[in-house]
Length: 221
Image 1 (tube, rainbow, N blue to C red):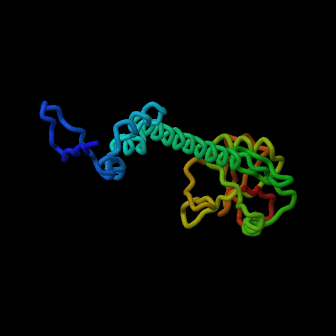
Image 2: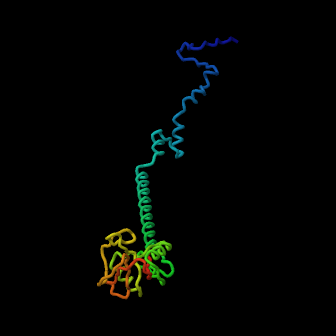
Image 3: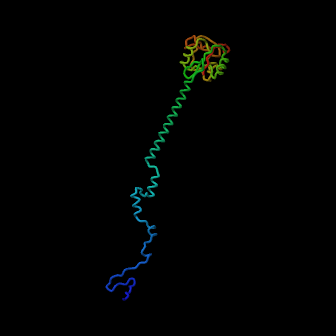
């Protein structure tokens, strides 16, 4: 039996047919590292199919920033809260002023407008009356308008010291303001302090009386 000669790699038969190429083990197996270094497009396709698309850097940055609509809403909310605070502050101020004007007068005192008045039931000199009123935190009554003049005349029954006296040649109220509107009664009277006679008409019931005379008095808070 004759042995056949095995042809070398790359040789062909005489008829021109190629011979089978013999590969080594390393040549036959693909390079696994090359697959890891060059991921196929299938990975990205799987990510898209799963519903979690890969976001670009610009999309990620844009998602972290507030939109223009949110910024406008935030500014509008701040403006609304500021207006509410100002309105509440105004309400507090108005209520405070109203509470001050509606304060309670001490027992035995009468209210007229924002002030309280006390008509004494005992008599003192003008200076003693002034000190007595100051001990209560007030002063002798200062009559600067017609309404108060008529009110004190109506509620009184006697003659009362008021906070009016003559300094040099000028009649001055206790609050240091000069007399501008007066209700002196007709007829001559002398003295450096003023009193109100509630038994006379309100238009003319002030008298000039010596300050040392003891009479009733009207205090004002």
